[in-house]
Length: 611
View (tube, rainbow, N blue to C red):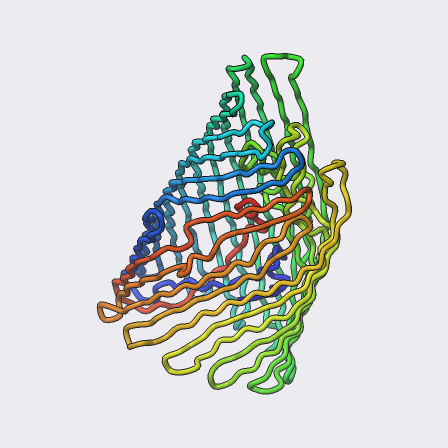
């Protein structure tokens, strides 16, 4: 795990990166593995994966197939104390999803100095869902309502990747080229049936969404160990992304003889061009690396909306354009002092960025209920962070403990926000916005210990302090007002493994995520405990795994807030589940590690939930 990556890697995000090593068969022959399991919650869910590998001479061929199928049930509520519109909303959601993932690849070892690799991913996902939203008002002057919805979704992603690596005569000197092309198509067809009571009024609404995203990436990386103690890295990268979304909505209300048709089209182009260099050196007990990454980021988007109805006086047409060109420099510096074999200190700095995802920018709605709708914000800007860390690692016979402090200066922080729908005074819009410049600092402690021959522990804890500043909408005046809150949060994770016998291992996991406070909402603490066991069979070629997730059924999302008005709510999912799985490896041959670069999506992701 690299918590503060160098200039070689994309500056996106603050979660760090994982250095993944994929294993390829080094000897001639055939081998593979099969993993299959069932998760039992409210309903059973199947997951199966088959991995095959065949090497003959200089050619290594591999394939992977994964299948996931199952139903998911979720429910929740929101109590709103909005003046004159006090109400309780209850939600029930049911989803059935089936996904197929196929990967085919080939490595060609041309000679000791040159390697050529190519692979493709084919991902097909089909889903269907239904749900119910009930709205009950406290005041009898408001009409209660019930909304049913049914939806079908299809998603198809194709990815093609090509890689060539040349090793020079000098040890450690190499040049690598990679090209990646992908295309994603998705479709959604959702029908809403709304019934209002006292008096009774029925209306139907159909949403059809089509989306397509094309993505091209090219990068070249050069590494040259200038001497035994110095190394130079240089690289370039280009990313081109084109997205087109269409959202067609038709609404009919027979009781008032009215129908409306709305056509929304959103196109979004994003290009990122990068150049980086790193220089590293070792001297005596010190080692260091300094680097810089230069990026030019351009976006060009267009949102067009046409609304027509039976009454031509209410017809509407509008257009919104998004354009930006941002040139950024991302410096980084890392220094390590090894005081002894058991004690080391690390000092590092890097500048990072969180770019809005398509979902966070697109003004096309993500989901909707009679009182709440989620959509993106086309005017959302990237978030920049200056990150400083100081860490101390102590190594002993039983393992290592690392403790550290960090300080982060956050500019244009991206966060969830809520405001009134300008075209529907009874509905709130949940979206994203840039808040003011904020700061965060805290302490972290992590450990990897073997306390006994039969007992090992991997644990981490952190506490951080953050000041959040920004503007929020006043529900009474509709005007934007400045706000500021101080946040103190505490988190802990612990994973323990007990070796009961040579064949049986027992695992116990627990986590606690402290409350989080924003300008508009406070998220309650989240916590859970899992227990599992793995038993080796068939002379080590197979294993059976059983796991109980969320033993005490405590994991859920709960919040309350007072801006723009008092609200409280909670959402629940199938957190407590039982998993039973089987793993079996077959074939022969030893494995050697062939390292591949793992490129990220270079953007932040939407929360995937209400807040």
